[in-house]
Length: 244
Image 1: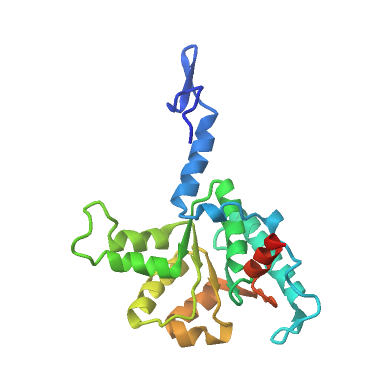
Image 2: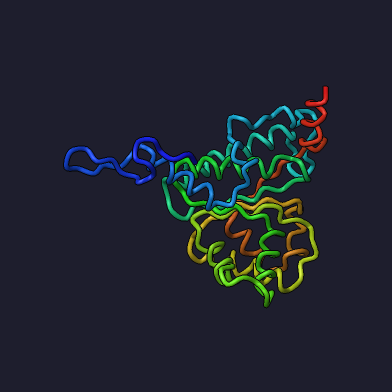
C-alpha cells in the first residue's frame, strides 16, 4: 500500500487537542486481513456477482440427486450466500463441503465466501491441503531458519481461525500421518464450533476410503454437502473463449 498522504502511516490525525483515527486505518486493517488470509491474489477477485451459471447444464441431470447440473449449482450458490449471512448472525453455523470434478467452480465459490467475510472484517485462513502438508513437513527440516513457523504454530492457526477453508482435498494417497493431521484440525474445530469450508474432487461416498472413518465422521458432523457438476472444465472453456 502507498503511504497515506493524510497521516503518513501514523494511523491518526491530530485535530486541535484530539487524535482521531485516519480514514486509512480501516483500509489498512482490511489489507492486513487479506494478507493474513493466505488467499492468493488471483482469487481475491472472486465475488458472488461474478459467479456464472452458464457453465452448468439445464439438460444434463445429476444421477445421484435427479436434478440438473444447473439446479444443483443454484442450490450450492444459495447455500454459500446463506453461509455468509448466517456466519455474522449466529454461532456454530454449519460448514460447507463442495464436491465435484476439477474445474467445476468449487474453489471459486469458496473464495466468494472468503472475500465476502474478509470485507466484513472476519479473519479467514485459506489453505490448499497439499501445501499445508508440505509446510508441516518442512518444519522437520533441521536446517530451517529460526524465524520459521513451527508445526504447532501452523496447526494452531488452522485450528483456531474463525473460518478455515481447506481447498483441494483431493484423491491423493493419504497416509496415517496425513489423516492424523487433518483429524487434529477438524476435531478441534468441531469441538469449538468453528466452521470449515472444504472443496474436494472426492465423491461423498468415497471420502472414508481416502480419509478414514474418524476424519470423515467429523466432516459429516461439521459440513452440509453440495455438489457442482459440469460437462467440461470451466477453466478450459474460459481459455477457449479468450482465444476466440
